[in-house]
Image (spheres, rainbow, N blue to C red):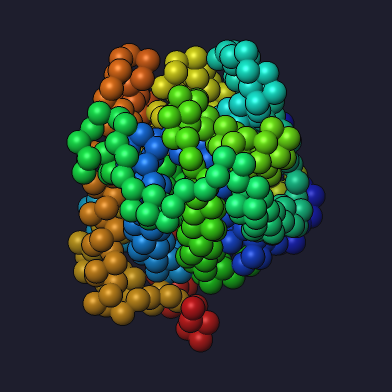
Length: 508
């Protein structure tokens, strides 16, 4: 395990790319694969299903529908901001590499290190939340058939380990097979949304609600003041529309990454925004019994049962669960690449071990580390507030890692972006970048809050900040003890010269 293979690949292992890194993995992923990977990680129908209880408590339809529209616009702004930077510096290092290249010499090292840890924690917790949420949906099917069944924490955790193992095994696929799987996720997600839309609207066994309810109803059941409740309810949408930036971790395996990765980021967000609307509006039209949904740990199976019966609900849940598994596979893929990339610049404890490539195509040690960390963090699931902690940490840390390079670029008046393959007009770029940073800073505050004040106790508290601080302490201690002497950022000394040679005719 961990031994670098001497087998031949599409590129010689001795060559280096324009960023100064040894080329160790083949570039066999396509643009559609990048979009599919982004869609798989965001996993719209799955993500909106597992977190719908948050929005139901905090605003109901107003948070579910208009929260989705608002977050979609914010996410497009962030994706456009990242796309500019990624087209200038297309490498799997992602935000931490961007921060190093954008920052002034005095702050390159520390900004890169902080953003690197935020990104890695974000990648791990996104993968954790997707896989754990899928386990919750699987076990939530049982009460549809047996009303007396009450799932226990250990049962959910065992299913979680099973889903984690399946996603781990799928990551042994080579790039060309991952490409096919990522492309398949586009078709499966689109087809699933259409099937669910037609099924729930045509059957609607409990009747249908009015347009006024869908588009104008506000219901607060969390104890927060109405205005603040709507913001807290945004966690449902913000959690889903987060993983698009993780696509940057695949830049070393995508052909023409300066084009494909930025397009993959923006394209996946736009596609997800449309898919989300097509999924949410039909659900709201058959949401006739909100009290029963609020009483359920996972409302979506109950909603499907009310609309399509037990057998129909089980079939629809299979579609959602498959999307969750595809998202778990994709998030493990990007998480392992993120860990591998940061390790090759000595940013991780035991970097020498985690940066090795197995059989010239897989960062196996980084993948194993990712799986172990996720399995251990999953033990928090024995507390009832675990899932809100997972989603909160994932949203906060990934958002913060995106904000780092965007804010640095703004502070330097976007001058380091000159020469980017894709670049917004200066005036538009300033607006989009500023909106992105302001929203991310506000979201850090919002998503650290408990999702409900009513009945708040140790079990229902939002532990996102606790998990975040725990990782921050580990990163700080490692930096003080070791990394400040070994972490010097990426080997980017030759990049500035080579970047000027990018073909400017390939504008997005």
